[in-house]
Structures are given as structure tokens and as C-alpha cells.
Length: 227
Image (cartoon, rainbow, N blue to C red):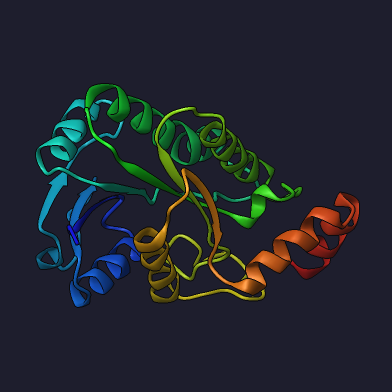
């Protein structure tokens, strides 16, 4: 079996580091990293690329992907913000950057790449406190679903304990990065679908279904009381 060559965009993130650790312990993977900051434990990566800006450095990113014959790209971009602010940054990181990179890489490399995006429970029902974040992830998902070329994994992770979420109240079924990373790698290794929607665990899937049927006003009221 040929090795999967996985490129992590956002390699310096907590989740990116755990994905790289897991792949080092398993056969069949080579890990490449792209980030704006030098990844911790650089030895985990076959090769890394440090860029200044994901938008202006798209050509450099596409060349790195092509030169290393990458088979899978995992876009780890994510930013929750606080009470829907700052709007521009939330939309840019969760929607504009990943979609722009996918479009550019697909148009400028002749490669059969599977793209994995990290989505959220917030797409099920964007609530009062996070509707900008939820809607940006929702639009990203729908953009992926409506593409007629390429292969994609939509990975709905639920709350992950990272530096980004450290100031946010922890909900039920929160997970550590290493737990999510293990499920993510298993999904990438076994996926056969052109567009797959995967949950990090059964409780997250059930919670997603519950959010879909509970009236939004009730969800907002519950969340307001808990905060």
C-alpha cells in the first residue's frame, strides 16, 4: 500500500501536533506541515513550510503541495471569537481561507487530493452567542457539498480542548486533541466516499441531531442560563 502523504494546513495548532504524533507511530503516513508559526517538534514532519499569509502565499503553498506529491490536505483553520466578534476575522479564518486555498490548489495542481475540513456542531443550529462562527462553518460545508470535482471529508469534531477554546465554557462531550486526532487519522485512512460527513464520536452525532430539532429560542435560553 502506498503511503498517504498528509499535509496539515495550520500545522502549529494543538490538533495538528497531535495528528503528526499519531502518524509518526503508524505505518503508511508521511506528514507535511504548513503554518504561519514554526511547528513545535518539527522532527515529526517530513517537511514544513512557514508562510506569512495564507492568501498572498497561495502560489508557494500550491508548489509545496505539488512538489511533495501530497495525497491528503487537512485544513485545521478555526477561530471562534467571542460573542460573534470580530466578524471579519471569524469569517476569514473559518470560511475565506480554507475555501480560497482549496480553489487555488485544485486549479493549479494536477493532483487527486482529498481535502478534510474541520467543522463544528455549530453548523447544526447557529445560536445567539456563536451565529457568525456557526454560519461561516455552515457555508464552508455547503460549498464543499456543492462541488462537482474532488474528494472531501467534513469532520464535525465538537468542542476540543485547545489554546483557542481555553477561555470558553466547556460543554458536555468535550475532547482532548489526541482523541480527535486519532479519529481523524482513522477516517482519512479508511474513507471511500467522494464527500463524507464524519463525527468525532457517537455522542457528538446524537447531540447534532438533538440540536436540529430543539427550537432555537429554547436553545438560546438554555445556553444563556448556563453561561
